Length: 578
Image 1: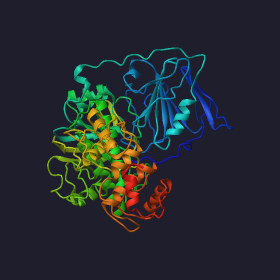
Image 2 (image 1 turned 180 degrees about the horizontal axis):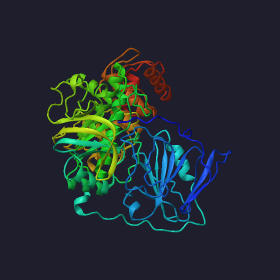
Image 3 (image 1 turned 120 degrees about the vertical axis):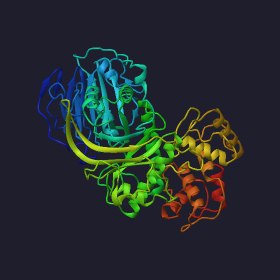
Image 4 (image 1 turned 60 degrees about the horizontal axis):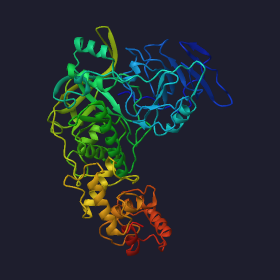
């Protein structure tokens, strides 16, 4: 998969001059503010002067690309000139008319602008996208960002106003697809041996139909989630997923998010294995959520795209820890795990630790080795004894343009030998207890932190139920939390906040710990200090300078002798939730 150069948010291209076409105007740059004004159908927004502006009325084949800051106006065309694949994102907007076409891209998290305004200040972000229906201008605004550019994009959205040309258009109901198109027909990519392709943006329905009739391909890679997705996905909807699988296509779902710490790309995973594992779990939560939203069912393989990197021992440990968290969490949600990477880096590293119990092995591999051989042999990179049971995809050529039936797509070529299997079952033994933050969970909460809380409650003798963990904070979990809180002298409200987290995470033996100590007790200490102090304390099982400082800070704030040595008094305070 092609790697896009990393560009700063405000440094891509020089400002454009005045343009006017199809209800769209772009002002000259305002030197004093560093911004310029874009108006489309009465929706006016201030953007950084370095952002590109692309009008689909004039350039219908333009690809929606978020690897370079841009605003796209109108509906994307049916056939677009997207590259085979890109990795890396900055920020951008798509502003299109409110009609049946755009309504198909909305969901329950699409916010509505307040009447008489063009903004929705509380619009949520999901999968690094924010979507606002501005009915008083008749437009749908979709904003893409990364964690690093989220504030900048929110500022752009908040600058929007209505002009006199704005006309009210209500958000139409999303078109109802046929019942068969509401979900994929079985786990993906399912049972398949043969050729497939991946491309940056999911092709239109007409292109998919043409390629199904004319091309040798029967599988397609689709980018469903991840903060490093560079291309927009205007066609990727639950109906699209259902239609393709009903017609015989096999889907390869891809998450492209954090990259290796030694990668030249941005959005890196931590070099700390414990933190990297937590980040892998968080990525799995987002990917599984995106898969469910699109109708890709449990039992499917979700592939983490980790682009090639120059491996080192520490970088390898971080990547494999990330993939361990990714795999464990996906199993708990009923999905299988896969990894896409260069055969010479990520996949080679995974193969080298195939039987290492320190890591949780991924279920499937997808390796890039552009040798033009349409098979799943990985040469010296992966022995034939590793992932031998229909668990491989080989990307054997990349960045090629193919035309079938008059429809052209830039693709990477793949050969698949895959089959359905049963994911591992999520248990407390496999639940990752490390987190960079322990935020409050309570009745109605879902996700990995609920799993963590349920397992800790069970460990403390307050079992939330027979199927722990479930990832859902239900009545039984609330009752278990209240029971634990009463036992520890904490207000029994059933809400797991900082005090309850601190008590849960610190439970166990209480040996005296100081600089140089190692092991499970240090790990528990680091987790509980993270909860108690409300800041991330590196969780690596080694009592180093950062842990000593965190211990001193905790002791000072709780009126204990701040010597940095964790003895009975400090343990007692932690286990009481203080």
